[in-house]
Each structure stands twice: as structure tokens, then as C-alpha cells.
Length: 251
Image (cartoon, rainbow, N blue to C red; front, side, top):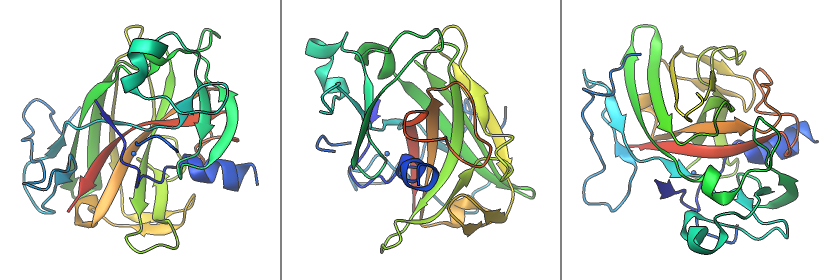
């Protein structure tokens, strides 16, 4: 479990701006059991160093918790606050760019407001491999909100903004029909998707046939506070969705 770096610019930034019109630091096969871990060498980064045409899947065990959550007064919380704020009710207090929004209460599927200890106990792995059909990615995450609705997104940041993003779109087909996964009663969740080359429409851009050829991309998991998905859009306003976790892939 790691906090997301402050350079993260998540999908939530566009949920608030496009749909509705942080002071704390932070964004089935491939077989996770056999995919080799390949972390960036000697950089101090938890990003995964990638080689675009490796035969084996590129595994990433560094799950980052995205810091868009906090207290009712809009101040941020982090896993470091568990000793004092474990039972503090959570609100969405920032979008993916760190700008304040809300606060919007974050609810569990049964209707109770989530607390810090329920939200930040995450761990997981991702593996990405390029195949003839496109980019095959699989994630497995533990510590999710039981029975919660999640979706997975490709976020491709721009090294020289503006704009902030080169493209953002759902894993799988661009209509968002293949990127949903639901957590189990014990908070386990997994998803396997193949994302073909094509044009993302949410934040427009041409997604390549192999994501591993990109300079950097993030696999971002979004939690749906309203317990529904919105096709090619992450949500219907800042109170319906929150960026939860991410795996960073960087050349």
C-alpha cells in the first residue's frame, strides 16, 4: 500500500469539470502468480519499469491509494492518520488534480458512511501484456469495500502539459461495458480486460495496440459511491465516484 504521488492527475478531475460542467501528499491471464516483478531500477520510484515487447507479462505490485478523501471540513486524511482517525467518516474532498471539491460523503453499498479504516486497507497486483488483440491487463485487489462497484481506467498523463492528459478511457472497449468489477463480501476484486487499439472518447486520444509502448500510463480503479457505472464516463458528478487506487507503469 502506497500513497499516490502528488503528480497524479486522476479521472476525477474530469468528472467534476466535464460532467458537472491536496494539501497532503499522494495516483484470468496474464497470470499474476507467474508474472515477473520488474520494478524501476535505482530510481527510488515504485513505478514499474517496462519493456514494450517482453514475452512475459509485466507485473506491478505497487498499489497507490489516491488521496481524494478527507474530513467533513475538507482537510485531507491519509493512511498515516489511522492511529487517530480510524473511525472518522470519510468525504471526497478533492478531484484528481488536487483541487478542493465537495465535501461529498462516501457511502458503502449498505448505506453507511465509510470510515478511514474501511477505505485505506488496500493491497493488490497488476499485470500487463501485449497480445495480438491489444493490451491485456489483469488486476487483483484486496481490501475493497465489500460489494462495492468499481471500474478500471487507463490514464495517460502528459509529460509537458497542458493539456494534463494525452488520453483517458475505460479498460476494455471504449463504451465502458467491460471495465466494471464488483468486490466480494470479503472485499476481493479482480478484472481481466483486453483493450484494443482505438480512439478514446472521454478524454480523446488514440490508444495504441500495446500500452507498454507509452512513456507512462496509470491503471486507475474508481469506486462508485452511487453503486452504478456510467459507460464511457467515470461518473455523474464529484459525489458519485472517487478515484480509489492506481498502478503506475512508466518507461
